[in-house]
Image (cartoon, rainbow, N blue to C red; front, side, top):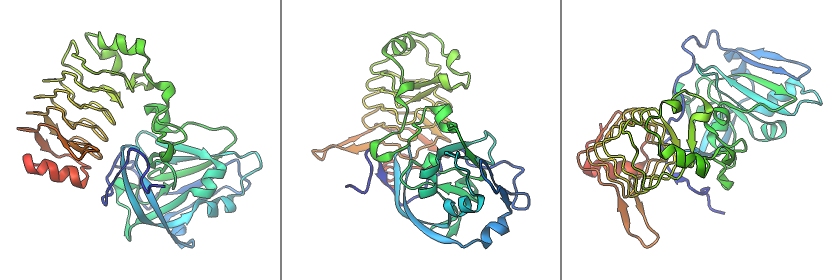
Length: 343
C-alpha cells in the first residue's frame, strides 16, 4: 500500500487549517478538561493535573482533508483510553463527542470503540509545544482519519448513547467516516443534483446562498464552461466543484470557499480572491493573470501539475498578486516564486 492516501500531497510543513484561535477568554489558569456523560465517574482536570499523568509519544501520519499529508509526525500526550478507563463508560455508552474552546463551538464525534483504539490527547508536536493555531494547550489526534476528526482546543469529552454529527459534518458536508484511504472527504448525499446545478447556473444574483446555512454549500456541482450572469460571487461556498473552462474573469470572489474545486482551463483574469479559501483547489492550466490572492488560504492549492507523460501544466500567473497567504506547500511555493512576488 502507498504511504499516501489517494488525492494527497506529501509535505514537511504543518499547515494551519480551519479556525486558528481558541476563545479569547481561555487561559491556562481557567482551562479545564471535563470528562462526562454516560460514565460512572465523571471528572475534571486542570492543565497541570493533566501534565502529571503518564505522558507518551505517538508517531502518526497526518492527512488533511484539503489534500496535504505530513508523514511520521511525533506527538506527545496520552491515549484517550487512559481517561476513559478512569471515567468508566456505562454499558450503553456508544459514542464519544469532543467539544472545543472555540468561537463557533467546534465539535466532532466518533464511535466509542474507534475513539478508544485510536484517539490521543496531545500537547506537543515534533518536540515543541502546540501553537495556539494548532490547538494549544491540548487537542485530539485521531490516526487513520482525516484531520478534521482531530479537534483543537479540547474542553469537554462527552460519552453518548446516540451519535451527534460534528461541526464540519453539519456545516460543510464533510463525511462522517473521514477515511482517507477510501477518500471519504464529503458526504455525497449533499451533492448538488443536475437539476439544482442547472438552476444555479442561471441565477442573476446569489444572495440566497450567502445565509451561512449548511444548505448554502454548493458541493460537487458541474460548473464547467460556465459564464455567470453576474461577476459578484463573493462569499459563496463552491466546494469540490468542476470549473473547467469557466469564465470567471473580473469576478468578485472575495471570501469565497472554493476548496478542492478544479479550475483547469478556466479564466480568472483580474479576479479578486481576497480572503478566499482555496485549499486543495487546482488552478493548473487556469488563467490567473492579474488575479488578487490576498489573505487567501492556500494549503494544498495547485498551480502546476505534472502529467503521467511528464509534461508540466501550469497556471498563467503574470501580474498575479500573492500577499498574506498561508499554507503553500513546498513545490507550489517554489513555482510561484519564479514568476510572482509572494509576500
